[in-house]
Amino acid sequence: MLAVALGTGLLLLVPLVAMRFTAEVDWSGGDFAVAGLLLAGTGMAYVLAARMVRSAPRRLAVGLALALLLAVVWAELAVGVFGTPFAGS
Image 1: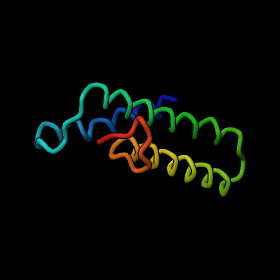
Image 2: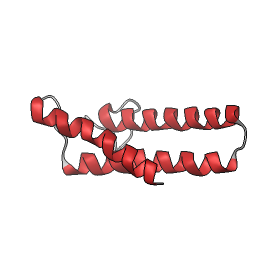
Image 3: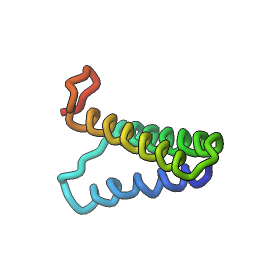
């Protein structure tokens, strides 16, 4: 679980550093909180699933499914691909 926390923190450094150099990246505290929850939740879900699944191909499938789910939710929150009530601009 420590690896998930460290990975989440490192990934959140990317937009934090980008905000220092460009006005194109404009995240609020809420954006960081939601991104952190999504990344940490996905990472912890993978760790828990990987403990239950023994074979490497199935672990890969679980990882790919979780990554796809993360990408779909992230895209919906960012730009509103599906037009849900919580869609971004």
